[in-house]
Length: 203
Length: 321
Image 1: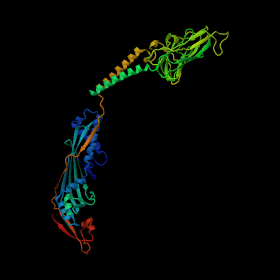
Image 2: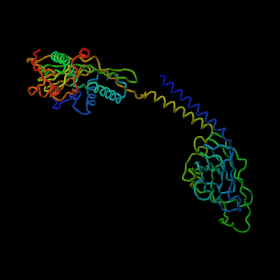
Image 3: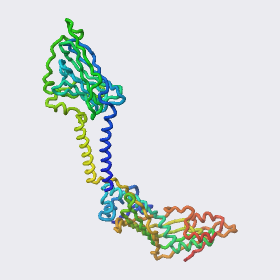
Image 4: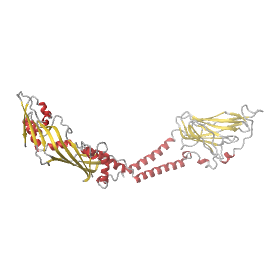
């Protein structure tokens, strides 16, 4: 199931389940559906039905927190790995006061996370619910400003983001959205693109 | 299994405790305690009068499930459960049950609860005194608890019947022979009156076919055998309930907790997918020049960094990494 959400999501959770507070309840339903014959179902089989649903709700609540991944953070993490941006950062670090405007080649940032939630009944772990979140961000037409080794401006660019969630290795949902990057990322006084030691050496 | 043993142990403790408390209660207040008075205490022969018998607990402890019996002597209107001649009722602040034994002249006030120093009253209505002068003793017995023994009071109330002096007494009805008890009273002379909380009501009737006098009243007022049977039944019932609970395996609500784990560090990769080259434009300020800022491309002018470098003369070059 793949849908395109028109709104510009800020996090993977928002992309997958939309804005609002319905993410946890939707996750709980999917956990119960996926785990009908799985470990969680077996683990709580001896418990009253209400306890099983409560367990799914607890897992979903915790999972929602784990899946609330800020997409801007993923972008920045990817840009810290991009050679052209790192090179620009080093050059501006070497020449104090200099600034570079970088029109970056179209690139793809991918990130995969595999969080899991342990279920404890009366203090004993009875089940583990595994999640796999795959993010793919296709960035094009990015015009970034770099100064003093930091990303200080994102003047233009767009990002086509795809998020896919699997529970217990079963693909549950995949969603896509497009984000206009200008003004989306909070840069503050700039985001470092290099390792800390390189800034210390320069000072 | 451990919990099941614990439950049975608790049941045993409860049963022993119940029996123990029942045994202890009998020694708290001596049977035969208290006083009973009657008002008025003298009538003329054949006079019809409503009498009030007042019992007072003179001991230091209360009556709990106790019983008081009052026997109407021969020659008087037999007591009856129904309103009318001989009708009996009681007023007990903490509640009691009034019974008139079948084919008997004994009034039983059972299931009594009386605080120390307090008491209750029995009303014996429209009673006709014997036709001959003399003294009539209304024998009274008491037991303070349900498992006690009915013991006569040290002094039972007595009614003095004086001979008529050629006329009827002042406020009494004309002398008349004692009427036979009402049909309902003779056929079923057992009745109960709920006289709780100071509310005294007339003796109720209509108890035709009720059990014999010995079976009337609460179970604990019928003697030690019945009491033992009741306790035995309670213990059996408790064991049965525990067995059912064990069989149904009542589950204690479980405490469910979910613990999040971030998992292994996220793997981030970046890969160029476009074919166009990366373009960079570097702007380097050089201090010490007095020249104004050179005109720059619209893109460069939008850079906040350039705005900060207004006093400097930038050098613009294109860098092709």
